[in-house]
Structure formats: C-alpha cells, structure tokens
Length: 77
Image 1: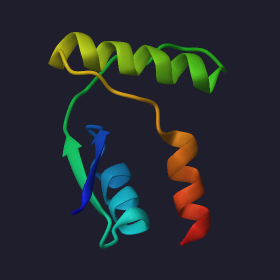
Image 2 (image 1 turned 45 degrees about the vertical axis):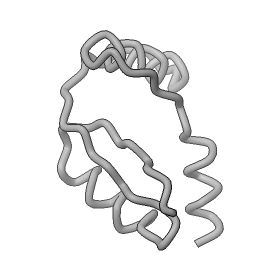
Image 3 (image 1 turned 90 degrees about the vertical axis):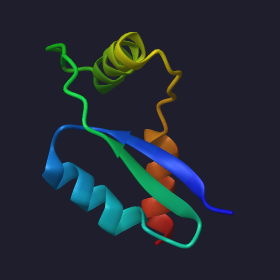
Image 4 (image 1 turned 30 degrees about the vertical axis):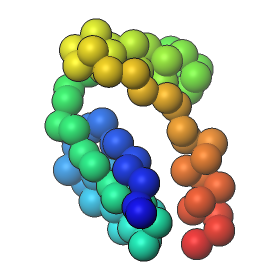
C-alpha cells in the first residue's frame, strides 16, 4: 500500500519537481494548493514551522516537517 506525502504549495513548478523526484511505487504525492504566508527570516526552520502552523490554521489538520526524510529519499534515488 502506498503512503501519501502531502505537499503544500501553490507553486506548480515546485509540485512538479517533487513529483518527478519522489514518484515511486511506495508514495503518492498529494498536493494541496494553499498559499500560506512566508515569514522573512534566514532560518529555514523558522520559515517551515510558520508555514506548517499557517497550514494547520487554514485546514485544521496536523502536518509534520518531513524535509529531512525527503532529502534522504532524494539521495537514495
């Protein structure tokens, strides 16, 4: 059974890139076209945390930052 990776972006180019890199028999890439506010800071962690919080406030669903896991999947492919 495939696992879903939910990718939240309004940027079609980012979505296509993620889909091309991560598409396998193991994962479905599910996109939610959601434009969330991006804070201005040099900290990637702070930007990610703020976007996850904004997505939760809009959708009332819990999300996790899986960027480390996704980076490992990319390195393995």
